[in-house]
Length: 170
Image (cartoon, rainbow, N blue to C red; front, side, top):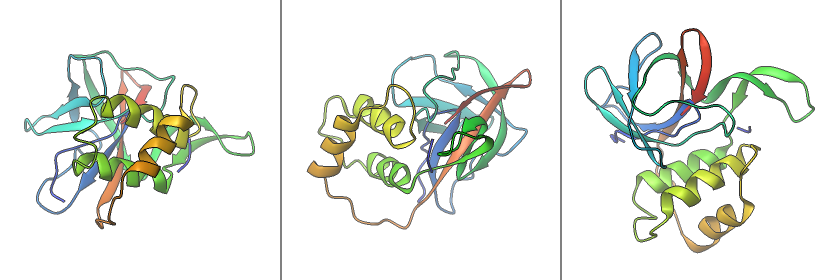
């Protein structure tokens, strides 16, 4: 994997979030509940009932819809074992700047007229993050057909665990 006041996130169980100053993101040690619908974007609800849209950053780590998870960390990376570009296992996998841009575009409604936007964004994120099941065609379509202004948003991953296991990064 490579590297506002919106209640939104991306999933990999490092979930991507866009934030500004008004809404706090979940913090390490807090619990979040994943929505009970299994399609992107996924819904994540924190203890204060803030609901975030999210996408998975990791294509081969899973969460169970409707289950509650513990936030391990929030940052500009997915946590847990991953392979670096050189094939070395690392514990932190920084988000690709294009992934942040793509999530910002989705969160701002740029793709709202696209009926399968969630599916395309999810597969484009996996492509950008070097994950299995990523689709370069989805990335190329979104990147070449939509214009997104730089919003100045901060996009973060929320890394979630359950019973001590690295489940996903959103």
